[in-house]
Each structure stands twice: as structure tokens, then as C-alpha cells.
Length: 289
Image 1 (cartoon, rainbow, N blue to C red):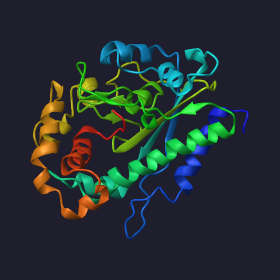
Image 2 (image 1 turned 45 degrees about the horizontal axis):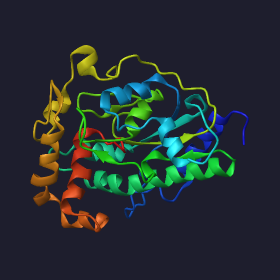
Image 3 (image 1 turned 45 degrees about the vertical axis):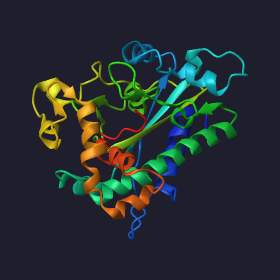
């Protein structure tokens, strides 16, 4: 293990993305699902995590809550002894190009990315935890923990008790847009993931002070293209209407899901398939809330 643990962990993530056979769209061309990742770090004592609780609801879990549930028998740990490791997995130019050409339904590559890409993201979470554990560092992937859950509570419902996008925001990896998606230095067509670990790593610089800094609509009063892009006008100057979005993705789009897509997630209903695919198309695809 390197002395610079931040660099060591960044290398672990980068190598896995570059070399793992699971980073694939599973197409005939065996295309990779993701380009090289971005990696950032935030400390468990970052005041943002308390702010998330105050804004989202008491059900929302801070890093210390996540860690204590994962290791209830361990020695007491302070929030400052924890680091949240976050990453961004950018989609490829081919996927972005195909998706940009669509108006109402996702492109085939986008569907494969949502399914196989998130399976890879789960594998990456497990890999990071395993590598840290082998080095004697306690770690847990919040979204894979049995106590991660969705919630219908609070002003931002539907939501979850841990958000990968909010962890990425805390780690300096991006800010939120009008449509609720996370806008990163490599764009918004991406997946995010995180691991909470008992390790001391300097937090990454956060080159913004406003949660909407990278959104041209909020920061400059321009753009707003996502409002026209949304097929059911679930995005307006007031923000993202999750209920309207979900009604469209869960109900009205069922009739348009090609039979060839359903084999990807045969254990799920058409409603869950359409929500995952279409809601993430219009909402940004962050992974985990």
C-alpha cells in the first residue's frame, strides 16, 4: 500500500475501470461502458452531511451512521476519522452521441449502460471495499448495505437514505442542475458510486460554493435546454417534478419498451425497467438517489 492513500485508492479505482472485463455494454462489439473515472474524497465530519439531514430528513444517513451500522461491535470512531471515497464513471462518446439523437425513448446503448453499467458500478464498490479490507481498513459501500433504502418522506421524495450524487458533490466532483442531475467536469451522462472507510485522506478541493454552480440556468440565467428535452415537461423553471416524471416513466412508457430490452432485467416488471431507464434519461443518472 502506498504512503499516499488517496493516490493508492485512486489507482485502485482507475485500474479496475481500465482492466475489468465487467466494464462492458455486453454488445457484439464488446464496448466498454465507461471511460476513465474521476475520484474525489470528503471527510465524514464535513458539515455538508449534517446539512443533508436537515434538508432531506432525519432518515438520511451520515457517513458515521453508515459506518456504525456496518461495524456495530468495533471501537468507537469519530466522524473525522472517516473518509467518503466517491467516483464518477463517465459514459463513452458513442453512448452520448446516440442518446443525444433521441427525443422520447432512450438509445440502445443507453439502456445497456443503465443495466450493465450499474452492474459494473456495483462490482467496483465491492472491489474497493475488498481492497481496503485486505489492507486492514474497515469499509462499507452504503448503497450495497442492507439498510440502504428508498424513502417517500420529506420535501425531496421520492429519494433514498444515502445519495451517491450528494456524496460526489461533497467530494468536489460536481454540482446539481435544474433537472436534479449532477453536472460533473466530464458531463452529466455518468454513474456515481461511493465507499465509506475508516481511513484518513485529505478532502478533495471543492471548487464551488453553490450547489448549482455548474448549471447555466441557475448561474447565468441561460440554457434551460433540459426543459425542452423532457418529453413530458417534468422540468420547468421551478425544477424537477419527480411525480410527473415517474408517472411518465412508470406508466406511459411501458408500451414503448422494446421486447429486446426486457431480457436485460427479466426478474423485474416493465414498470421498474421503465423507471430505471427513462427516469435516469431525463433526470441525470447518478446512482443511489
